[in-house]
Image 1 (cartoon, each protein chain N blue to C red):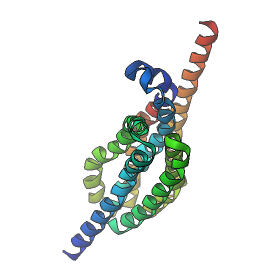
Image 2: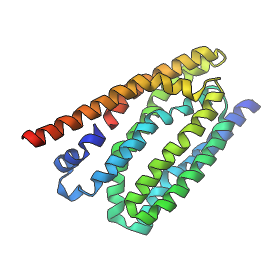
Image 3: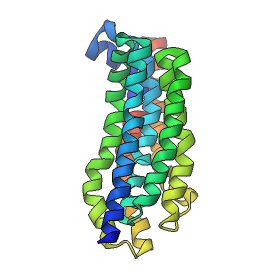
Image 4: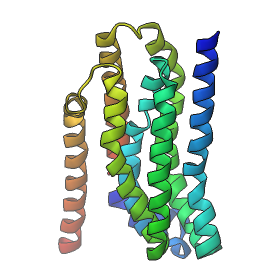
Length: 97
Length: 139
């Protein structure tokens, strides 16, 4: 129980902190540079950065439980992790280049 | 294809009003390239039950990213995009190292596994650019 609480508290902390990293750009660009630059910034961001980090959370719904089951078998984790990343890169790298 | 075709893509899909977005898209394409792989390290922290490390890494990366925004603002919106992209690559190695240590994996080993895919993507980019330049010369 204590372990679960710690896991949750730390994850909540991460989500909270990460929120700043994800939103500070919009705040600063919008406030200091104006709404037209913010519009340009957002279009570029939504075309590239947002989808590429979103792949992670979608595939993560499968990878989190799968890697958790084999968490003590490090060799299996390494293999599964590198294979999944290769498949993602095979799609995302040519898309981005 | 985003980096190589940004100029045509934005003009055709969004129209001439959005031309200032083209350089932003080209720079962000490089950030997106890293993040499509870099943001997956979250799976390791979660599945190893080490959200404590994830929290600390998150604090560290957030500080660096916010500093990059503030520094980049001097160069306008392009400055912000460039600074953010640089921050993404500067953070890549330490974040990989923190995550991979939990599963006893070297960053070098992981990058080597991605080498063939990277080479294929680079080849595609070079071929696309060469064809375009050739068609300009002969067209």
